[in-house]
Length: 259
Image (tube, rainbow, N blue to C red; front, side, top):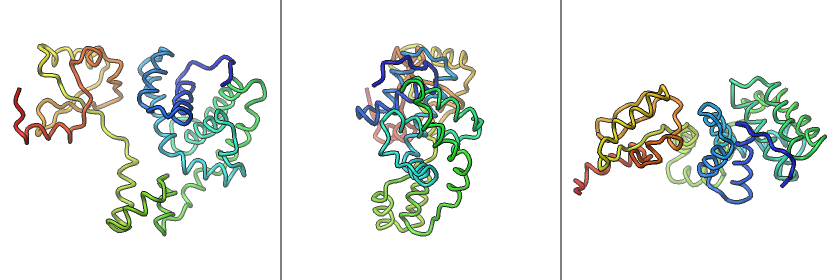
């Protein structure tokens, strides 16, 4: 790892998460929590870092194929930092509409120069320029005829797509991959054993200007409607809320769990 000064911003944090997951086998969400706290990111930058890290990891296979096709460089042949920076930049270029192409390229070059030293961004700039020029068209032109075509288009391993096709057929396999690429909702359970927990939770979310939805089949479940970071909340730190999907929470009423 380079000893040079590293950018302390959303993209810098996302890069740290990518490196920790690839090189150290870290869980992405835990790495994000640690790195965002270390960088003291505000709520908006923390949410952006989470989007960048999770999206880049999810799209890694198709991003690597794109760089190889358009840039004529195999990402596996690049050093870990350059490879992760290229993936991060390519994700912003082809998967996000909110980031202007020039910003995606220039900030990636800045990351490379900071991590690799002066001139370290030259290769990153060249590769991302080519992705910027033809990446979206390349992605849209990917075939969907065979199950392996479908797997690459959706950035899934071939073996998962083939297993699902054998079990359920190609149409369902494609639907499962599409569903897996959707951003999951954020939900939690109110800890009813902590007196006043619900009031404290709502006070926390009022400060974030984020609303909470309900679930008729799980009375203690709440769904975060908006950009909310549970880990940064005091009610998470104290145990007033517990992150848990609605489907998991619907089990308890079915088994009539008692104290």
